[in-house]
Amino acid sequence: MTKLDNHPTVKWWREQTHRPSTPPVPLNADALRSLCLAAGADDVGFVELEREAISDQRADILKAFSRTKTLISFACGMNRENIRTPVRSAANLEFHANYDHVNEVSRRIVKTLDQMGVRAMIPGASFPMEMDQFPGKVWAVSHKPIAVAAGLGQMGLHRLVIHPKLGSFISLGTILLDAEVSHYNHPIAYNPCVDCRLCVSACPVGAIAADGHFNFSACYTHNYREFMSGFTDWAETIAESKSAQDYRQKVRDSESASMWQSLSFKANYKAAYCMAACPAGEDVIGAFLSDRKAFVQEVVKPLQDKSETIYVVAGSDAETHVAKRFPRKTVKRVSSGIRSQSIQGFLFGLPLLFQRQQSKGLNAVYHFTFTGAESRRVTVIIQSQTLQVEEGHLGTADLAITADSKTWLRFLAKEQNLIWALIRGKIWLSGPPQLLQAFGRCFPT
Image (cartoon, rainbow, N blue to C red; front, side, top):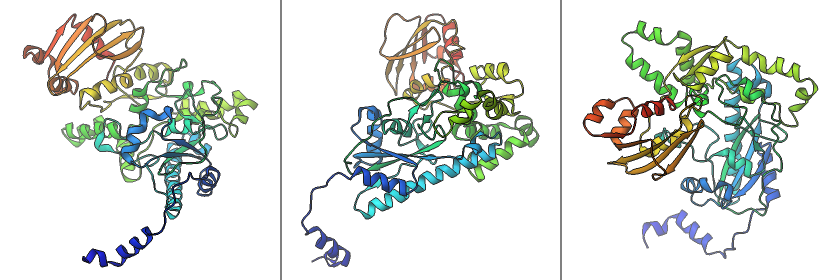
């Protein structure tokens, strides 16, 4: 026998495997629910991997944990007053503390399951994420649609999951489980959102529209200023500064201190007023229904009146919104920091970066033909302040753009002059060039 065969651990394992094995049986849903609640979750639900509602996530879930059969989704409530206060340090403390709590709850659950012989994996409630994939999809699991499928609530106008009891004041966790469960949960039959539109009135960048439209770019640029792209923009500001004095003219001392705080402790969210203003949920709605005017005065108005810097991309809908709605707030133009690394990334980002107010009056069909490293044919339709992106060339183009894919990406990153690219034949236009300028105004970065 080899040395491996004589090893005590190997001998022990082989003795165990000689015992008769029993086929796996589904975990009892009630017992699993009790385990999760005992570990610190405030509510929990179970979703089978094959659920159609999460089909778009299936590949990423299996990539993270190939043995996944069930997803455990759970929620942990927050201290509401910490989120509602205009004091951002208190709000951020609550966010980060609750995310840490969610991750610890996940670890307790998984450790107990492991002792039962059930394998499970924790994708993580928030950061860190797979930043090597930035600016693409950096998260392994999208917690919100899983929570909705698991019956923990419904998405509100503000794009947060609203729990029927706890309201918007929750953090979500997901666990990938190598076992089936005896009973699965399904979405609740109603939406706890009361359509009060307070999230619309509180959002400093106008990311939430009363008609349901959501401006991802506006929210991302301001609220996540000290995360991801905002950090990249700040780092490039340092690199481009000629001296300390030049840097101070671009970045105030308070901004530098805030970035230091994010780097030293944890990145700070600049807003989340949509959550703060939300009165939905059985535990939350009482004060709103008892005296709506007083609720607005106490919760919403201090956020609206707060003197603060609002970060916007030049020429964006957010810049216009802040100037119109919040004269006490200071607008600062910044770069979104988002640079497409591929044609797929460029196309993925179009709906996220689209500024519908900037597109007013533009009704055009664009045919893109990308050649070289990435070959794609795509139609982009901008009409009546809406955006549509389709594979292939559909209809008649008002402007046809043929571009070498690498050159196009360098043009987007402002590393390639358009005129020079046209002269060299790396980009070709068929149609009015003004339509390309109009296209660019719809996607400021």
